[in-house]
Image (cartoon, rainbow, N blue to C red; front, side, top):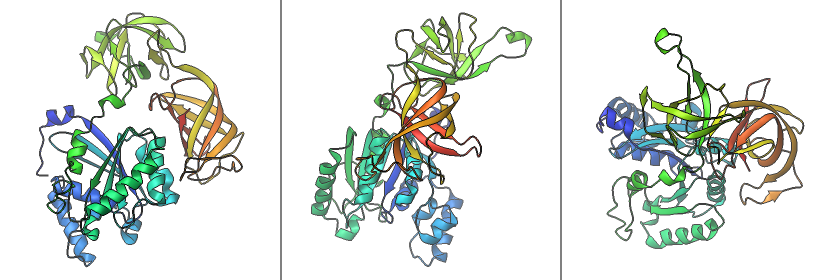
Length: 425
């Protein structure tokens, strides 16, 4: 890889997670391949394999989509049917890409890929404009509280790089997107195949005065997307070294999911309600001044309190809601339909509880986000709002307030299959 970065600099770099979505043949995989290729993020052996595969397919140019279409079935059909993750970095930022499918039957795959994303790239074919899949993918991005959408109008080379074609699609999308809960929407005319406005500015679209896609990805501000107000620290592991030197050490390891924690802060432990003060906050064995999302740290407390995995450390005057009857908007991931009265394991942050489905309130039309109240059979890829009862309280925020403490998964206790991804309402 010719784009080398110092190891320590790499570890300290900002990370952007983004997902790509669009209709079949809109060029998602080619776009990602172009990003990796033009940003010099491909190893030499990958490049050689790419050239060989392209020649075997009888193509004169290198087929960049092969970089992400990893499954044999995808290569044969020329489509993406699974979530393909790719990692790359530039001197400014690290990236994790989720290339998600366009077919309606793979809605669950898009939800999976978008669930942790900071940004969504929505591809639109310049010849076809805004279509049903465009709206569905945009609605899912909005539903999952993704704050940034970049609309890439692709295949501009097939409409002679027409500004009129681009502006028409832009206005069409703006009209529809007024219903979305997305504060930051940007538009870029591109040709993934030719490389126009992906990494380098296009000479054929001098009428476009905005940034390239890579520049946008490198510079979009995501720091404010995390919740720095409501302090939340789910305990993942209790550290008790079994050696004489640290016989009395008791540390609580986990990831900060909200707010800021500092030594000396008063804290409350849930569910016990006991209070203490933070003695130290440590990262990689060294004391640090403060911890904030999404840092993984170890805390020690001044008092010897019984704290276990699944407990949550919070601030006394700012506590999450304690709930057992939980309203959840879910995407159903299983081939077996959801059953009222069905019992499922529920995982929330580091806490595992048992739950039963009390009621299916309504399903959601994924193309319009309208409620469907006369059909409550929830099958694979359906999105619905349900109410579950847990056997122990959850300490949760709404998903709109905190994506980490507002999300759950449901697991079939017999097959151990993850059957639903959910957002607490």
